[in-house]
Amino acid sequence: MVSVHGAEPLGIVGKNDWLFIRSELMSPAEAAGQAETISLIGRFNKVLVANGISMAVMVVPVKVRLYAEYLPDNIKLNDYTADHYASMSKALQAAGVTVIDLNTPFLNSPMRNSDTPLFHRLDGHWSFTGAKLAAETLKAGIDANPMLKKALDATPEVAYQMTVSKRKRPSKAIDLVALVPPNSGPFAPEQYTPVNVFRTQEQNEANRVSIGITVQGSSFSMEWSGFADMLRFVLQRDIFNVSVPVNIGSWFGMESYLSSDAFQTKAPKMLIWERPEFAMRAPPNFQFQDPRYVSNNTEWLLRASAWVQAACKPSTVTARLAQVGLAANGINMKGGDVVTGPTNENEFIEITFDKPIEKLDYLVARAVTAGSKTLILEGMGPGTTTRRFKLNVPGDDAIHLLKTPLPSNGGGFSKVRVYPGKSDGFTLKDLQICRQPEDLVK
Image 1 (cartoon, rainbow, N blue to C red):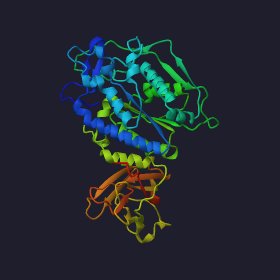
Image 2: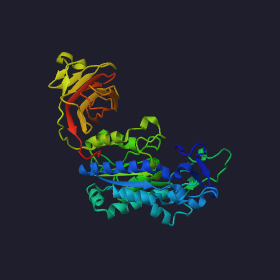
Image 3: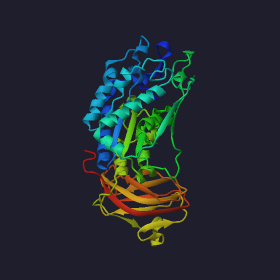
Image 4: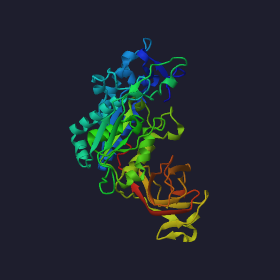
């Protein structure tokens, strides 16, 4: 977690050994970034719906609001943070997004100040009690929403059971301890009650079912948090969990899932996108994050939308493989495809377009990149700045789908070179140019 509050310590020591993180205290200065986040989620949701996927967005409320009474006397919950969840949810709903409200049930839960509170005292994440309440709240939201209920009913039931240990154990959830000022402790240790969620029948080929629900979230939804297991239990369904830590972030995590074989070969009926409330300030181009995961906002949407499209709407742009590079003299071309042996970093194929490719156009192909996990695409053309795009690929000897827009900084590229990198063999098949929905980026 990165502070946006200058040199102040990230961690806050509150009353009764409750620890907090300063970046959960939000301000109106972050409203513009949040507005962009909400706009992108709304447009992405529209693409999903058009392709038969129902999405629920579940925002995890900040600990500083849920347990504001434990903040130190010199730090108060400001009005913006106090009202933020409600205003954010309203804006998401106005953008057409189905939102699961966790803030209200968490604030009103009788377990909030029990001996098993909803969040850990010494950690920024919810406890198992909180994960259970989140899963139950999500189920209630699904049952109350006809679109989500229809998607749930279209997925096969799987029987899950839960056992609760009779003994508590010391908790290892202490991530905020390292963020508070030195010599702030020691802090009273926490205890937790181990819980086990399991299938009543071990999965095998005879009883294997298709998984129709995916959770893409943050560390709040990773397997260790218990949330995914509780969701399996309350829904009585298998869940495909592709959550990633907050340092990687929701935008990169979602795009990685969409481009994976898991999504491309079997898109879910329902997509649950869990996002921490404090991260809503951060669109793809947010400057206070790892540069590896920063992206232009519009280009993130173009890439995500391209991966979601279940069918190709043909573009007016046509493409052909030029007989240069790896396809020189046509020796490696078979019926318009390219099939080669080993390649090195400098070898390429070249794709030319009959007219400049536009922002809403995207390239689709199937490729084998045996041994190489990266494809480099280099777009070029008159009046445009040459630009390189990096595509992560499995690098095995199987054929995988590729989809990518090629946005330029000018009038559009007239050709693109594809560098497979160092590989044991490279194949490119079924090349076509498709078109995104016309209202995607308006």
